[in-house]
Length: 369
Length: 246
Image (cartoon, rainbow over all chains, first blue to last red; front, side):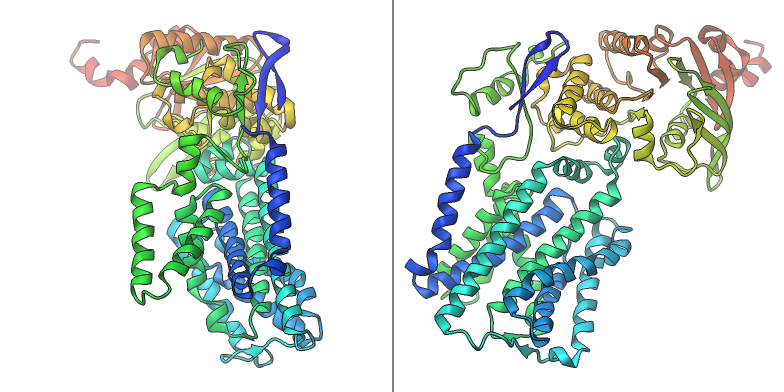
């Protein structure tokens, strides 16, 4: 909570700007407890559940990055599978060269970020649908280039070396923990990035590029930075995907279905919120477990859910929570509380002081002149 | 040294001339109105000054610095603030966040200083009570005020106001004119495109008239409005003269 000097009332200000409606300490305690539980999960959960959790984390990483790109920066990419594939193959390359695959994860992230930089000079010249199609072209080009490397197994793929010395239990634990750690870093880093000044800039670029530029924002640099961050994040997802499977194949790592899953998860959870992709991933896995024996109906129901959400709840399911209960676990916005207009009760961190504007919003008295 | 100087600025899109050798200069704290019929090139002139449009020839300088290679965001940071004829709010952000973007990026302020800048801009245009409202939910008057508040948050030395009173009621125009006169008192130069002439006359002390991209009149507002050049532009003076009505 920061105090702001008010023109009418001078330095002894009663205006405050808050970033969170609930005490951040509660969020922090909750996050630490949850993180502790998830860290120790392999020791008290069955192996099958640990495997599901691991896949869940991979999807959370991907969806968080896609949400950053599309939901916050307005860059709708359908080619993020390119960086997932490059991340996976970077791990394979370093492992073939004798680097421990787990150590190769951060190296793969750096490789993806470096590759993304020149790609932005092509892609950021484009907007809307042209941008989307171009990302898909870049992803396919990346796959075709990988196919031409016989060292990496060409079209048939290759087994990931460097993991044979570990016992199956140890390997599963290490895979899970590394995936969980990467997911945690990605979500926390995204949250911190969106809470920074850059987060505000990103939203303004998404909403109106022209106005953002004339408000002093360096739009292209901002978009470039976010594209590189999202590429690195998807590279991280590809890297942990690579260590979670014995064999790396171009058809799997560069599959368009990764982007379809990111898109589905972000859309049903809620684009433009950090919580949305996490909630969407939970729903995705719940539906997947529930519908796994339904054959073709599995995909039809997934499609029906996506279409229904797009039509009736375009802000996603987390949007319902946010709009109805004014509740955010990971808030990144700014709220002004001007106590000179109306006293604020001590316990009204959230809904009540927001609702005093909501109550007034249609009335002429809401205009302060 | 003039604050803003345009020297022979020209721009055409195909066969359409939007700026035809425009030359004028503005001193610090000046208050200048711009009139002209639709399609005269008024908004394009703002685009040329703010950097949204690149000129074909001529030069624009701000505080003596040539703006030829200066991008729009840098021009904003130098002190050129603008509003748009059709308001361009960041619709999914709150009113406060709209002004905060300009305070942080345009005025290069951080933390509490940026909050103060953004909030005080809202107070100056009478929108502080709407700070937490989504900008997309605002009515036209508030959208126009938000445009002004956002431009103010960027700490401008000159404000380019593009038909900010258009579509407002008489009372709203009076309110808005008072706000703009207040800015003038703080040393901010105003360049104001407006069709609501009474709002201009109550605020500016110099008037420019554009027609077909060219500057056809420049001077004291009432003299400019009464000039033959302006009457010709607005009323088709040649035809009227021929029929003997003039």
